[in-house]
Length: 350
Ligand code: NAD
Image 1 (cartoon, rainbow, N blue to C red):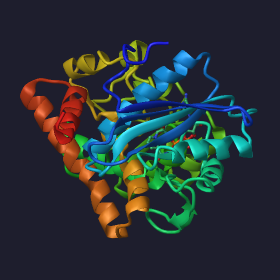
Image 2: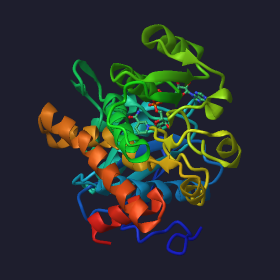
Image 3: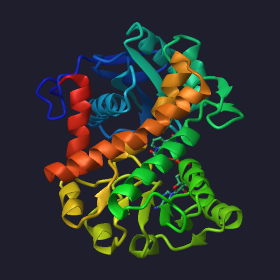
C-alpha cells in the first residue's frame, strides 16, 4: 500500500498506524499540517472495505481539516483518525482505551474529537487515557444551557450568518425578511438554522427522511413540508443542504432553481468540477467548509477558553470570510471553491 506516492498524499507531516492485539484496535492517525497549531480532527469509526480505503479517507479528511481551520482563523492544524471496524458491533471500552493511548502517543500533535461512528461516550473513554480529546465533557452550550460537547448550535449560527453574506452578494438584499429558503435535513444543524431564519422573517420549506424531525419544523416553526425530491426544484432564494454529502450532482443540478446554495452538509459537491458549472449558471455556492466552520470554532474555544461573546464574534467572522470569498471570486471570474482553497493556503503561508 503506497503512502508517499498515494494520490491523496499532500505532504502530510505524519501518518501513523496503530494496532493493539488485545482489543483488536486497527487505526490510522494522519497529521496533515501543524503550521498554525496542533492538528485537530474527528475520530471516525467505519467498516472500511480495505486498509487502502481507510488510508485514503484519513489522508483526505486530515487535509480538509487543515484548510477548514486555517480559513476559520483558528490556531489549529489539520488531522484525522480512522478506526477500522464496524461502529454497530465492534465497539468496546478496551478498544477506545487503546485508541486513547494511541492518540496520547503523539504527545498533543493530534487532538481527537467525535465523528461518524463515535460520540461523546467514546470521547469520554479516550479521555481516561489522554488529555488530547475535545468534546468529552459537559460545558456551557453556545446560546445557553449545558450539553455534552455538541457543536451543532454553533454550526447552525455560522450557516445563518453565511446565508446573510450570500444573500447580500447574490440578491443585493440586507434583510432576510420574506426570504424563501429550502432546507434539506432538519436535524441538529438544520433545525437550529431554521429557527434563526424564522426569527429573521424567512419563509421555510423543509424535507427530512426522519418524519418526526420534519413534523417538528412544521409544528414549531410553521415550515412547509415537501418531498425528498421536490426540495430541489422549488422556486426559492436559497437551497440549504443540511443532510448528506455529494448532494450537488448532475441529477440534482438539473432540478435546482435556487440562485444560492448555502448549507451545513460536508462535501456537498459530488465532484470538484461542479463548482464551475454552478458559477456558469450564476448560482452562488458558499463553500461547505467555510460556511459550516461554526462547530470547529466552538470546539476550539472549548479547548482554549474565551468568553461567549468572543466565541459569537468569531463565528460571525464566517460572514466576513464569505464576503471576501464572494468578492474575489467575482473579481477573478473564479469559482468560490477555488478562492476558498486559495485563501486557506494564503493563511497557511503555503
Ligand atoms: P443530523 O443527523 O442531526 O441531521 C441530519 C438530518 O438529515 C436528519 O434529520 C436526517 O433524517 C436527515 N436526512 C438524512 N438523509 C436525508 C435525505 N436524503 N433527505 C432529507 N433529509 C435527510 O446531523 P447534523 O449534525 O445536523 O449535520 C448535518 C450535516 O452537517 C451533516 O452533513 C454534517 O456532516 C454537517 N456538519 C455538521 C456539523 C455539526 O456541528 N453537527 C458541523 C459541520 C458539518
